[in-house]
Amino acid sequence: MNRHSKTAIVIAPFLIVGGYIAADYYDNAQKAQQNIFPLEAKESCHLQQSACYLRHEKLSITLNYQQQLQISSNYPLDELAMSLIDAAGTEVRVKMYPSLNRQQWSSTHPTKEAETRRDNPLPPLPEWVRIAAIINGGYYLSELPIINDPR
Image 1 (tube, rainbow, N blue to C red):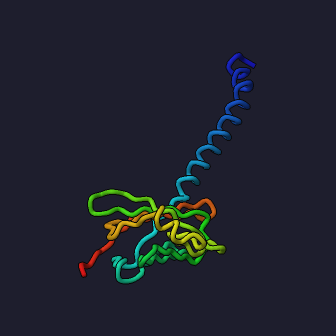
Image 2 (image 1 turned 90 degrees about the horizontal axis):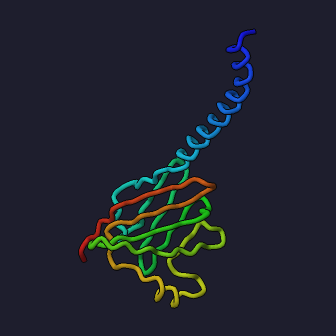
Image 3 (image 1 turned 30 degrees about the vertical axis):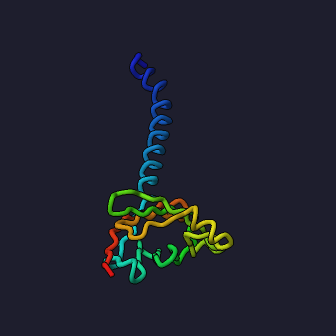
């Protein structure tokens, strides 16, 4: 056996293990990119007049904005983040409080309603809404314009 064959036999196990580790890192990176899903609006959103409907495959989310912001989902949400953007481009993050089943979310705390309205003010007419919902490690994102009809 010559010198090159001996070197190949010694190095081959390290290359096999290194290739296996590199393939695992690549596979995990591909799976991480697949955990972000867009939520799409069914139609244009007139949030001041009626509810807005967002969906991705079997998940559907409904937004209502009357005296308070309410969100309902057909699946329990692990977390929900929302922000409203006004005409000046100012973004206001809105703290959302879940119900017990985590399918209904509201901008006011059910037991401290007056206190949360003072601490969590909503802009009167948002121009854009940004939503991020997390379900079982999957991130569902949406940014949609709100059509405001002058009254």
